Length: 162
Length: 289
Image (cartoon, one colour):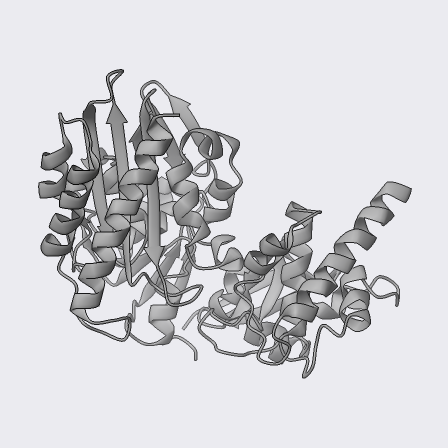
């Protein structure tokens, strides 16, 4: 089977590789690049543990071929903190106890980045629908919602002070 | 889970896609968003030898009114439709459906063209397209063809598209004054296929008489289904509560659901009855605004 040379930017760094047609993006990220913060949960695009940002949009990397990401800019959880400072969402999940076991957290945070980009001041209901494709089996979601609310406030304050 | 081996090909234009498809033969499949096809490949329900990626083709992502038609490019994602001002204002039925289709991250990738071309009665868009009397525009080896939606769905995953045809555009008659539509599906959880869903599109004249009516049903038949008997009852009539109840009853009788994990046949018929009535009322309310 044919190999394809792909080049993409991951967390600001350019990477090139030869991949099989059938290699899934999540496997490329975890196994080829050793970025294991992106998790594999259900493998069927239900749970959202594998959520990453592709050209700024949240996608489920278990249901995306690596070869299709040729030319894309990808952000994983490892690339979210700027210069060692937590992203407001990371800080908010910490402050609000938005995680217990942490398995869903990278996906939950990256999904929330996309949510807040499109809707900087969401209602509680909009947050709940906004993260409806990301499953958490520990928290009962309440503290996750609070985390997203705190981050939304913080990010709005930041953008106003710029 | 990983799919069986296949060869990936990227098309950068519709003509290149068609040429690739003709060269590679019937074991080649087009992929747009891939969120129906790739899961099937991972489960080995589908094992195409070749995937032709059409998602990078420029110029097939747009939403515009032109002449008498609303035109939506086949590669327009569900998210793009969800945030589109024209659709929000004049075609809220589309928002009803998109809100309930999969989840936001899937909608970032899934396209309207793929949702329809997949030919699955469990997808949401087919029922809407039936209700709104859409036309599917496809390009193939022998040129461009326009396929009325009633001629489009042939069977389980089977459509009027030839293997090398690329669905390029959806055309929907432009919303008129006095028209309104609504869609709802009952789902067990976010991301599940519908237990049952109903799309209604109605046009009233100034006296409130029903000039045109479309009712499409989701996931209660092998092929996306138009509720013809219900439409005939309403066309040319002033729609009363009694008529709405009668159409709900007709919908529950004419749909063809099967018992499965989502519910028994009787339960689904009952759901169809209820949603049909609710969506008729909601569409009428919007038509009268």
